[in-house]
Image 1 (cartoon, rainbow, N blue to C red):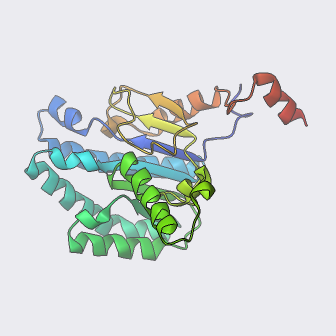
Image 2 (cartoon, rainbow, N blue to C red):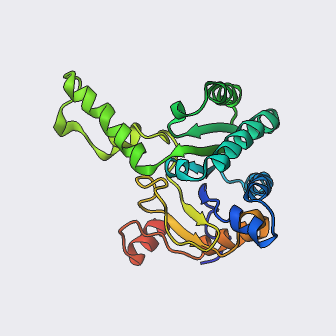
Length: 247
């Protein structure tokens, strides 16, 4: 299937893996890898705009990442805050909507305030939507949605038999956003690591050995090209898809 005949993925989700190894390969502190990773994000955002991608979801800090050395976690929080401060006006001027998905209550009050201000400033923008998953876990996401439904049942506002996949989806942190078409993981690992578990039921996967700081527009195009060669059947047969397209 040619790329021209296949639409570019509208929602791309990425686990940005390999910052630490990138720095280690250069005999630099791990934090230098994270800084280089921020620059890679800037490049990928620009490329997604050029390719007319609608949504970009980036796994920045998982709920499991708190287990890392305290110094590294502290530096990551500082980098997150600094990146918000430096980038939010630029994102806004480029009509980009920024959303932070995850349990932000675990962050400092100052960082929570920054997040709120950044989301508010860009809320009405109509270009690329960027979801930054921070203190995020797919199981947490599903659990907090189910808890909301349980509260509605407890209050008599909802019947158990009326709980559907759609009602669970509506309570997720990504509610109102199309599910990912393409998932990319850099750095050579081949697992989803608790990222968007519910949302990626029918997502196409692409794994690359390229470390995140080296992942650029050319590498992204490779992933998109791979996506465009695939037949997404969603449970149907190839014949059914051809009939649907010819209808």
